[in-house]
Image (cartoon, rainbow, N blue to C red; front, top):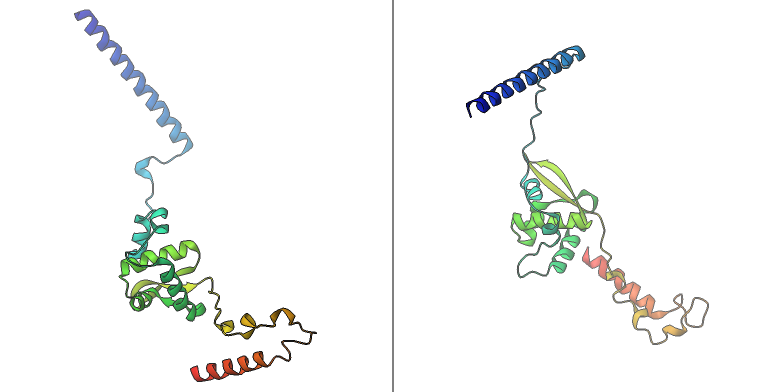
Length: 195
């Protein structure tokens, strides 16, 4: 038994010696190649990271699925999305601050931020990070302007009894139609009053 222990100890000592020799060889090769050791590596000063906004932190915490499936309790998300589009579209390419939008919609900033992330992912709006009054926030800009049917809502052609006979060269024509003329005049009068 004692002989076995002595043999094991001598074997492990031989292994240690062999490992030390290999390490010394590797160190010598590194010096020849002039590769700096870890201690000699130059430290590059790290750039100060901008403080992340609440929205950026939220975006990192939420998965794509959570953002896509975001719902606000007791709210019709389709109607809310349409309302957001209508409001943001009025600002056109200048956009609006998302905090202003949440105030108009009476949403919490948490719900508003999640909604903005969802609408951005769907491609309806874009979010542009800006510095406003010393704080980072987002400007929301509409990507897809919603189509409005308002301009043709009361068009007489939609309910015209002789629409099938109407053509540019026919007896019944949009060029000579009294219903269209009246409708246009009423529309012009309404738009002038609205201004």
